[in-house]
Length: 263
Image 1 (tube, rainbow, N blue to C red):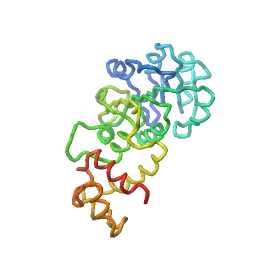
Image 2: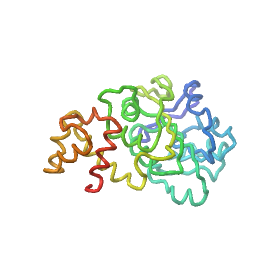
Image 3: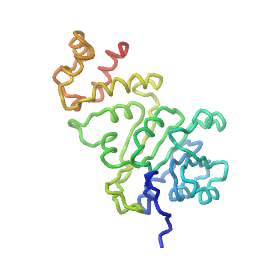
Image 4: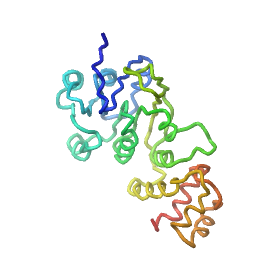
């Protein structure tokens, strides 16, 4: 009989069961960490491995069934029930005064992107180890150098150094998902490529630039920026006919710096 309860499909639950993947996710402890926050711990698969480091571990969980499994591991006051997208980080950080948090999660596939974008905006989260559906992970980090740029990659790279941690096939989970998964590691940049204070403006820019990433960028942006479009491209030293997917990170940042004040 499985040690896992029946997965709740509405929560997107797939319980990690591979010892090798678990080890890759939970080691090593990043340096100078004040606390660990695990999102969606479920039946405490990763949690005991994280608790062994001796720093405070907090868990954010929606499924009431797992409270009695999590409480002995992290303590009652460190179990936070509710939707991670609605978690009050301002109150949490005000009460605990943590300055460097390692966030760990086997993310539910259906909310992995909005959760990542919310974590990105919290400067006290300095390190993250996050599980994604493989095709989503490849939009955040890819070894491909040609035609691989996109809004998620440009947004996450502006705040974090990102690396591949481990591949997780369907058989690494109970029940097995229908897709492969990939774990990524994030280390916050000491100096972000775009100031966190203007991350909303930068995200708006990226959504515009990458809305049709395989079409020539100049033609797409002309409808937004009008007759000054060519001037902006010249100043950024980028050809009008380039496709958004072919941009380098440097070109994305240069174009943003040219037009940021009109957004």
